[in-house]
Image 1 (cartoon, rainbow, N blue to C red):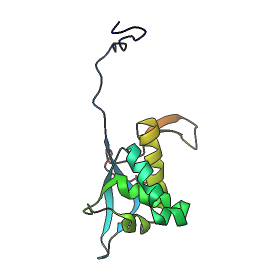
Image 2 (image 1 turned 30 degrees about the vertical axis):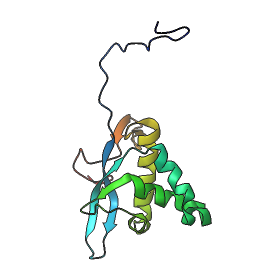
Image 3 (image 1 turned 120 degrees about the vertical axis):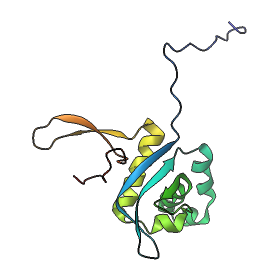
Image 4 (image 1 turned 180 degrees about the vertical axis):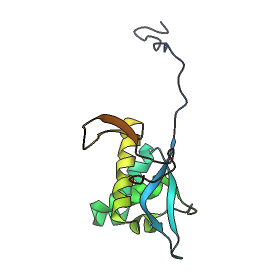
Length: 144
């Protein structure tokens, strides 16, 4: 006991793993920059409370609450290909499939802490896990 009514936190039985704060990803379609270059790989960092609060003061979000996704992703996506200045304009110009992919990745890493998802083979029904971020296998999601 460290004080009246306060207990020391329980000691973990195994050593703690380092907190993973950045997640690599591969966009399904890719961001096409002003020069026509497609960028597929990128990184997203964990969101902070500030990342979720600051966009609520943004006039674009106040006028259109759906714009929250754009502003929020622009804060946490740190790189798309060679593009390191990821801002709302970059996120606005993503293909719909890439925006949906980043929304799901954001939800998964910030609420569940990982990028794995359980899936089942449509033919045999066998269940297995896939890494939504891609990257590790070298190909983009959906490519063989």
